[in-house]
Length: 202
Ligand code: GTP
Ligand code: MG
Image (tube, rainbow, N blue to C red):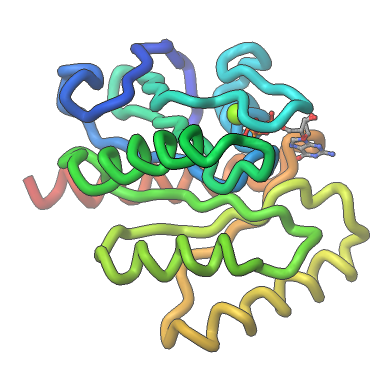
């Protein structure tokens, strides 16, 4: 799939005030600073679409972007901001929970994880909760350019091993880099494939 049009369609703090149009939604989430906004901009060929920053905690709302007038890309706030107040984190957690539990249009959630590190408790707890709530997800290991290809491969294998301790069947896994544009085709083709399968069951 090629993205020919990406239009910001609104920010919301609750499913009740997200854009009214019903289109399949593909959402992106991850710990703060994992490279979520950079990835979204890379996928959409637009460096300014989602706000990026080296200061964690930039995205505090649910942002909808209408893609090719056919589906919504949804930028969710990050989870687990170390530097945020307890109340601030609680508020974000409730915004995320509301979207994940109540958005009927959500088709798949991409969970972004920094490829340089082992999956931590925060990520694993979040992923396991998705399983409990039967929310379909895939994992994207971000910032792949920061490691050499052999080290990157080994680190991803390690993370697969960590996941297989709790999951019998591993989710779909992608590696990305917003700098080298790695992963773009694979992620967009995967979304395209899912959208086509939805249209066939209508
Ligand atoms: P919050 O919205 O603040 O939670 O962060 P985010 O997950 O949206 O991260 P963002 O895209 O703003 O990127 C955070 C920092 O990582 C920025 O300084 C980016 O330039 C850098 N970064 C993001 N993706 C990549 C990547 O693929 N490679 C490299 N080398 N740096 C990246
Ligand atoms: Mg962001």
